[in-house]
Amino acid sequence: MSKKRRRHSAEQIIKKLRDADAMLAAGKSVGEVLQALEVSEATLSRPGAV
Image (cartoon, rainbow, N blue to C red; front, top):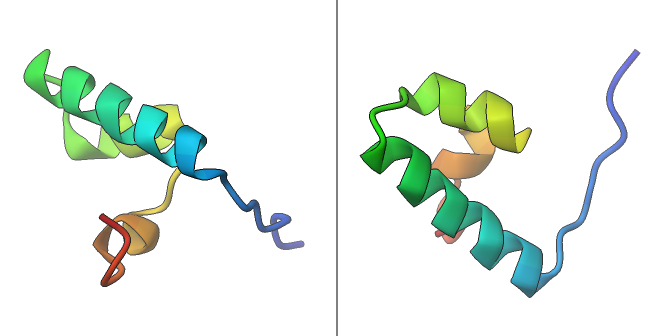
């Protein structure tokens, strides 16, 4: 069973990126940040995603 794909608004993406920066600055690993934000590593590394 696959997960339903989500589409995020520009505001949601900006919030997630800011949250990710804060978590990384606090010493969390990339894996922990991705899991907390419910984002896959493939999404993060996709060209044009950031």
